Structures are given as C-alpha cells and as structure tokens.
Image: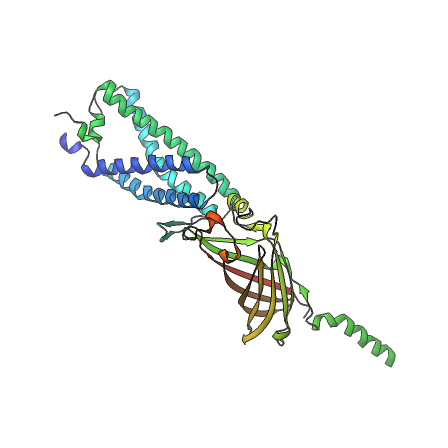
Length: 182
Length: 187
C-alpha cells in the first residue's frame, strides 16, 4: 500500500469532523439545558438534543464502517509503545461511546415516556416501555457514559495537540489538511 | 305456609331489588381508568389519573333516565416522569392547590345504536365549565357492566397551560380523554 493511499480520504475527514461537531455540540448543549426549569423552550431543547443524537448513530456507523474497510496511516515511528497503546485504547473507547451515548439516551427517553420523533415528523420506535425506575437508572447511565465520552474526547484532543505542537509530526495535519505547510 | 311463602317472596324482593333497580352506583375504581393523550413537539404523550370517583346510574333500556357524574383528583396525575408531574400541578397548568378536582356531570344520554350511546354534559376544570359530548359504548358481562368512551378537549379553553405554556407549537391544544368505568353488577 502506497503512503498516499493510506492518507485519510475526503470522506473519512468529513465523517470525522461531522461526528466531532455533532458529539461535542450535542454534549455541550445537553449539559447546558438539562438543569433548566421545565418550559416550552426546554421541551424544544430536549427534542433538538434527541434529533442530533439520532443523527450521531448513522454517522458513527459510517465512521466505523470506513475504519473496518481501511488501514489508517501508520503512526509516527518515533511514538513510544505506551502512546500507541493509549491511542488504540482511546479510539476503541470513542467508537464504543459513539454508540453507547445515543443508545442510552434513546433508552432513557423511551423509559421516561417520550418517544423520539425525528424532526417532529418521523417517529423512531421505543426500545423499552415506560418505566419510572428504569428511566432514573438510564438517566444516570446516559450522564456517566457522556462524562466518560467527554474524557475520551479530551484525551483524543490533547494527544492531537501534543502531536502537532510537541512532537511536531503530521498526525493532526492528516485530519486537518489545510494545516499542511507546502 | 302461605304466610311463610309470602314472607320469603318479600325477603327475596328486598335482597334482589338493588340488582334490578338501576340506581346510582359507585364504580369499581380498580377496574376503571381515565387516560389522556396529547402531543408535545409532535411526540405522543400519554398519562392517566390514579384517583377518581364516579357514580353512574345507567340502564341501556332507558338511556334518557341515565345519570352520571365523575370527579378526578388532578394531583393524582401519572405522566411517567416526575418533572412533568410537578409542573402540571402548578398554577399555570391545573393549579391543583386551588382547583384540586375536575368534574363532569352528564345531562343527557341518547341511544346511537346497539350498545352505543352519546352522553352530553358539563366538564369543569380549573373553574372553567364547557359542554362536551362523548360517544359511549356499553357492554355487560357477568358481574360487571362497562361504560367506555372518549372525548377531545382543547386544553386552552380550560386555561390548562397558561403564559408561555399556551404555546401550542410545543404542547398541542387538543387532548384526547378516554375512560372506562366498571360498574359492579349483581346480575
């Protein structure tokens, strides 16, 4: 495989940033509105949050599919063993949480008695019935999965910045081609 | 002997009288329900009231003589989630502290067909009264008579959800109320 074919394609880069924007955005949004007092605005926010979460699932599936079908560019040779292991582990967690986060939210919403109706038009089936105690447990689960996701994203971003500014290799540039110095 | 027989008839008549007379009867709350369905952000929302009481006098052969009234304890609302339940008890919604009960009193029942009737009456919620009409079905099985029906109300007509909650883009105006009253029967 030539070095060029191992670069991330435009599709892979688009999927990566699409997922990043959706996940970071929806996480911050959820964190912001969850403790607001109940109001029509909060009901709108809940729906928007769920719609964005519902879009994360197919995006995550495409990202995983791309990853399964391609060999990513090799890591810089200078990377120590522990960094390679941490990178593998963090990526595995990220993929896991990409699915666990929206699915836990979907379950929580169903258990709380609120179906998800994508864009107010397309009902997504409930996967569990209404159940007060289950809803409380799933709410906590959704919260903690997302804190864990945020921690994994923080490690991912910190590593990217270390590659760019400390190691001065091409790892971040591969996902941000416009940083490439010609 | 003759006297004993007439005494027996008298006792039988007294014991059985309530079974044949269709006087007002309390419903069997455990077998009855009042549910409602609405929409928020186009998401179907369902709920029920845990506590209500109804008195029904209904003889399908004489629907015009029917009497029915029910009272719903609004604080007993079950929406499936605490946050919503706390909110709808507040002044902008039901204001349960000031108006703890909703009431319905049927003023007329007319037959529509076999086992089908139409009840009209006054529904009072939050100090506001409106006339409603509800189609009913009546069925009878050993030990129980069932009256089932439904009607649609517009929540804003009863000031249920005032101020910013009057926004029907988020919470729909129309609410479907369905009910089943089980009336114990000795027949």
